[in-house]
Image 1 (cartoon, rainbow, N blue to C red):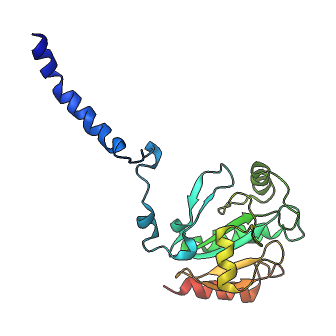
Image 2: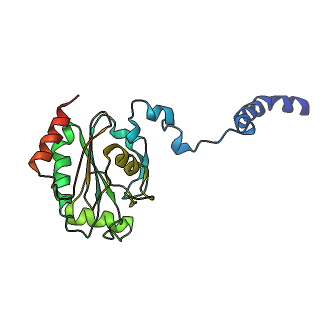
Image 3: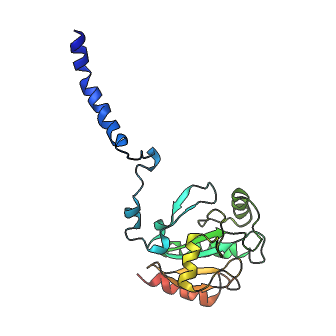
Length: 205
């Protein structure tokens, strides 16, 4: 009878062995929350090199792949809370809301490179929400120029030949993932020439 009990347990032991075998061969366990996430190759498929980056979201620091914006016209802006151009938040949010259905997305990257963004990510998020009602995607504070610039801004500098000279510098990226133009902080979101180029890019498919 005891022998029969041992044999009855064999299927369960075999299942346990099969579940354990990949880890025994050196495979890395996949966290449950990442099990359904696309692989790097899948994420990169159809995703321009300029967007193959992941950044922490400003509000909760959860990682966000920029590949989700592939095929869109992207406006990248380095922002700051205590700058003379901070009021541009309102115009940028209006642009994002007006043209979102046509394929525009504005991406904000807070930076203290010009000593005008000293707060924490939470403080920045609260300020943007309470003061300007910002709805467009924003990411955790990082550097946007020099040796410490984040990977996206390094590529933007390489493609455009220019780095941000001040807060609210703007890079317009076409649907193909290439930099179309860069604009100084003096170029307001409502600037006629800027909006004309933005609309021209949105019309391209």
